[in-house]
Image (cartoon, rainbow, N blue to C red; front, top):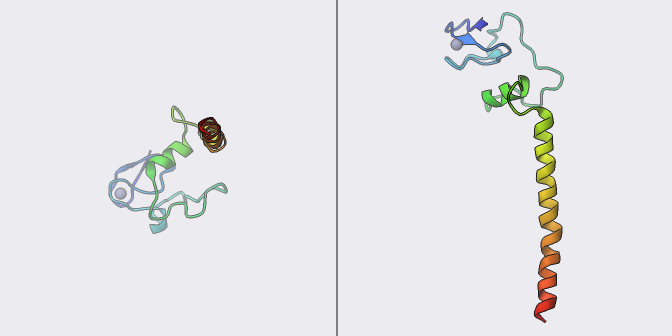
Length: 99
Ligand SMILES: [Zn+2]
C-alpha cells in the first residue's frame, strides 16, 4: 500500500490521484514514477478523472470486465437496430391496415 507524500493517506495500488488531498501524478508525487499505459485513452488523468471508473477498468475483479462491458454494448446496439428497423416496418404495416 502506497501512501500520499502530501497528506499520508493510503493510496490504492496504481492510483494516480489522492482522494484525500487531491494531489495527483501530474504534480509529481509518485515515487515509483507512475506512467500512463500504452492503452491509456487520450486525456487520461485529466481534470475529469473518474476514480471509480479507473478502478473498474484497471482491476476488474468482481466488477464488470472489459468483455462484459462490450457484450453489454453489443446488446444495446442490437436493441437500437431492432427499434430502427422494426418500428418503421410496424408503422408501415399499421398504415397499410388503416387504408
Ligand atoms: Zn494526499
